[in-house]
Length: 344
Image (cartoon, rainbow, N blue to C red; front, top):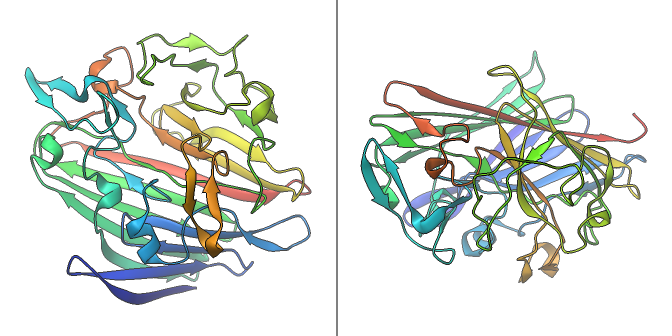
């Protein structure tokens, strides 16, 4: 089932809320402001549904929000060191919105933009419900080169999988790193430090005090980043995480497991799969009590993000997988969030 509803206007653009629902009762709500995931209702082991993502009660809340809830981030998600990079011999200075660095695209990243609702459809043969959003980022926006045309397709299927497919083309060489900043809480309440996590990565990127990678790709063994087997988030680092993991090698275009999370109380599980080379685990350490759904404060460690991406500061680190999108090439990135229970 697919339903779309016009709920008002923002900056002269129509504001939409789209609902995707499958026959098992799982439901996903989206809005075209920041192409955001508003809610995901998933069952626990007893079949009880709860909203397992943070956010706000309505689309206006996402517009007023300050923490990228459920949003698509770009042109370059995550951080670029010293707020500059060089491409084809030209240096591009960027807006400093994270100390001396730039974060999630700069002053007005894609998470603060109105996207166009391009399509809503229900493929009854496959049981898939789709919503497709588009945004065209002009040349020079936030001082990034090239006009980039982007689409994001959200698909909910009968396996309780939410698949995000990003596609983009550019009319000039540029850098591009897209991700979704949705915050998960599989219990539907409480903090997430007791959530058990496994990350399919043997390496991570150490960072400096500004969370910019040093350039080293280090082993997780013997560090607080060793999630090579299922363990509670708080077991190795009670203060949480905002760190990038280099995922295990896979064939080009292969969609492989990036992370698995389980909430013991509800039995809900989440498997994240992607074709991207890296993933940022963020446990909401900067959530400072902003009012969320139902008037509940979104406080520190109330949600975790699994941001599939290129490594942070990739434009300045040639040893990392390249985030350069050349004119004539196509950017294609798939991420799957598969919801289940521990009794399946």
